[in-house]
Amino acid sequence: MTEDETKRFWEKHAMSEDLLNATHIEDEEDLPLPRKQSTKPINLRIESDLLSRLQKVAEKKNVPYQTLLKQFVAERVYEEEKREKILY
Image (cartoon, rainbow, N blue to C red; front, side, top):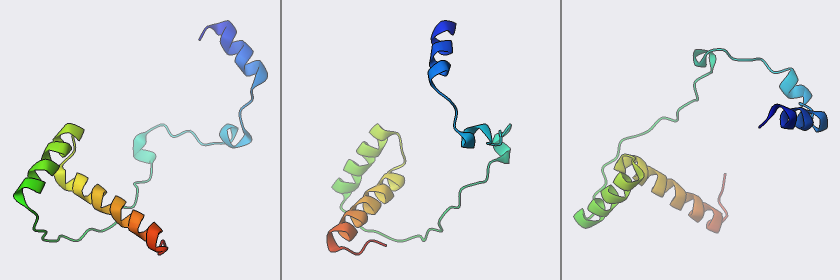
């Protein structure tokens, strides 16, 4: 964006009061850490072929297969909760 384009933009737009009054965080260390939900280890037996397929998909997505499996389970549980009208 050129200087003239920037000038024209700000002639037509304004920052919100919230943004103007916001505190600037200089360092990421000042950011609060997100609360992480506790996890519980489980044993899950699945077919070797299914595990292999899961691992290939996870590799393509560049995520650990356990993480991908948790995402898949969470998505499916959410869909079932919506279908059964038991959302929290």
